[in-house]
Image (tube, rainbow, N blue to C red):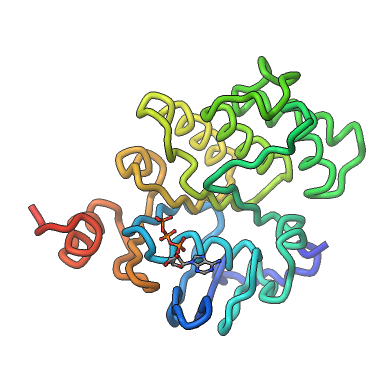
Length: 251
Ligand SMILES: Nc1ncnc2c1ncn2[C@@H]1O[C@H](COP(=O)(O)OP(=O)(O)OP(=O)(O)O)[C@@H](O)[C@H]1O
């Protein structure tokens, strides 16, 4: 397993991306981007539509490779590792548009993640599923066909499936998107529980006041670059951020 290969270096970044370029044809989406974080950190990512946030998450998770640059996770160079290999080493992502396995129940969806995401015995996988469903408030819909779930439960299922892989770092892509404030607040409680378990979080979200209940550090992206990175309130009042993201002038 990748974790066993990891050569832990004191002070080394837990997740680090260096010199990342990503192009889709002629469109440059990420440009010479550097990013790093420590174990257990909770980071929010904001930025205007098309800034490259989801593309960054996809590159970090291994959905596709960068055109240039390198990524290391827990001391291991994972640039050429697949998403499944990264998942087994503890780096997992959720998707903006949940896509549960149709024709399976909620329980079965999470069971697939628990058994394949990080090789587990059947009993261990079962325990992980029950724990994940419980943390995500889904025990009551465990036997429902996943394709009959409403949006909030589909988002919860994204979290439960990711949690069942026993991650050390979760990359969340607009998990609050499309939800009411009340529904998004329920997800915040779950994400705070993940934090209490020591799981690191990188969360892209447009609902900023929800994001700020979890993020201890905030990154703002624009046009494929990180334009601000630091303490959330400072970032949100940064003149470049206000101009790029909020389209106005600082208060
Ligand atoms: N697979 C792809 N092929 C071609 N272009 C793509 C692809 N994925 C993303 N893009 C383009 O890359 C740019 C950045 O997209 P991305 O989804 O990363 O932005 P984002 O910051 O997450 O935006 P949003 O907040 O709207 O989700 C956009 O112009 C998008 O159209």
